[in-house]
Length: 326
Ligand code: ADE
Ligand code: ZN
Image (cartoon, rainbow, N blue to C red):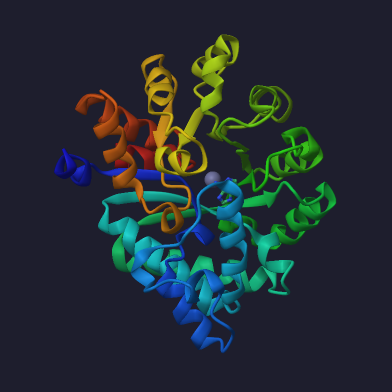
């Protein structure tokens, strides 16, 4: 089964570039930039043992401080090129990569530094590896809507390098509706829209409803709790709105990887996909996420293929390019 999964041509639609930074790269960039090695790394016996945390809060407490090592365009290039090389090694033909500009601009790193480094890696990886990639700009939902709008305005200079916008970080008391104006403007500018609706949140169903009915998203990131509301399930099925699910991430931040719910949605005809989220932290790229589904649920080989067909289907590439992949 592992060979079957490895050999499948795949697309990834939910990966945070900042979540792909392996401990060895954090260490390397800290040394190159002459800054202290973050404590999440200096406390490890060696960099191959992975980061240490046990839930979403302790994850974020490691995740954000590690970004201090990302300072120059070259750093963002190296980060993205390393991920794209890994994605290529897993037979990922196309990937849509989230980036969080505010996590960098708030530290004094300019938007242009971030986006030019990422863009150059994408162009070079396409040329050298043949892997296709797009950027999705995420707003940090625990910052205010004005900051998201300012970020959007700044990003307009790079409009053609960004395929759509999303919403991530701490969901508690930060509903999609807080960013209604920002998403409306993003749509006016021609960007596609997605939104994290994380697993087992205080207001999961209401946030999913807002994303669908008030924001009018094209996709939902995670969104697995939709299984609890038949009406919303019917809506996403009828409209072909996809869910980007991340089983290994789920298993770290909640008690359950939600394999049963993911499979139920797939079997109900929802366009479910399997993704890695923050693979360097959760220790699973796309293949490992698919292996978890194959090992811990009764998903069939045919259904594993449907997951991949869904991913290409709901990806934000042109219909013409899509045909080349399918
Ligand atoms: N940003 C990066 N990883 C995230 C996650 N798992 N949930 C919300 N925001 C994130
Ligand atoms: Zn995510």
